[in-house]
Image 1 (cartoon, rainbow, N blue to C red):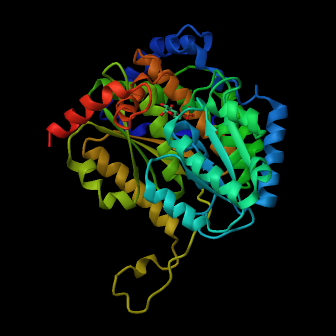
Image 2 (image 1 turned 180 degrees about the horizontal axis):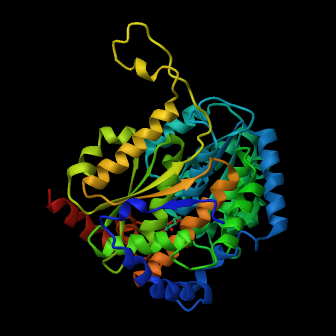
Image 3 (image 1 turned 30 degrees about the horizontal axis):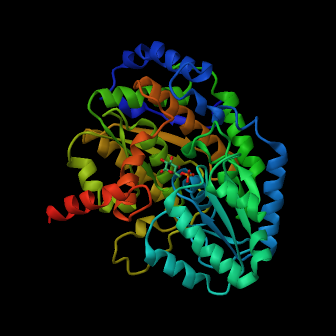
Length: 449
Ligand SMILES: O=P(O)(O)OC[C@H]1O[C@H](O)[C@H](O)[C@@H](O)[C@@H]1O
């Protein structure tokens, strides 16, 4: 039985009863493409069986490396971009308290960089790091991505200056391709401990490979339970029957909505610790589905916070939105609202009630208001914020988005469009091999000013 309770009961004004059933044949076809490997991108389906079919020796090495990092480092600097950081950061925020990382606790603080080109960000990180003991996990499937490569240069230099070359090499963990790429070549030459991103798992599907597992384990989380959650989802989600199978229902319904003009999906939460999980969803959805001039645009909002910013737009703006709420049924903690004798805020009726009680009713009120305002809302209910639930949730979305992509007739596993900006950037910064582009691009950019 599904651990996730998927609730589409509020779609009645937008989706007729028979529509879901009419998607069954298409969903079955999409599922065959995925499971039998007859669909486009069939080289990248390793994530489907990953929760049971992974390298157990490497998994134990990850645990050992995490223990070493916990023993010799206050901070683990995780360097990576896109799928090479989003899953790990999402998991660490999901599993820890809201003030994770503000002070050192029992385990090293895992911080992320190499996911932008901001000099200010790296300067601030270096300052914050000060003389804390640290290790580096550099993560890049291709081993050649600009943002992490630049950040790695900087922190490798810091490690060597602080610890000397030999010890620095022992504090660098490289997660990359099994055979190729600049990072692989360097790791071999310098003797860094290496972990492999499997060939058949793309970046945005890689959180349950060493890409996510090493930082998640270093942060103190139980990666056995994380994998067990994903394995349970894999076992539960084999049936495509749209009367009961939740990831397939979700995939079908978001396509039904898309075809009616609801082209933007807002992934929402009512727990700040789920903020990065939405960011992970955005890459999974956006890179998988946005191509061939079509696809649902993924956005995110954090409630109730953003009800006071984009809430107005959702209620009354352009009617092309639908919402997917990830709701935690049993939040990790709660706080009671105290009495205030003067009752100036007139909230004394809430004394003795809890924050989560109010939050829950905010959710219910928002669902009804947005539905009335013409915005379809679906809810993915998860029981709690444990490792097991997280693994299950990750697999739910991975499966749903792959099916959804095939339903919309695209290859869900490539991302050709991501290369365009890189070509221009390389031309503008005179990367060898791109010099021809430099003058033309500089002129084009400046003439519009
Ligand atoms: O792990 P890397 O090879 O450095 O790639 C990091 C990211 O690069 C690009 O943006 C790709 O489109 C992403 O899918 C990938 O996750």
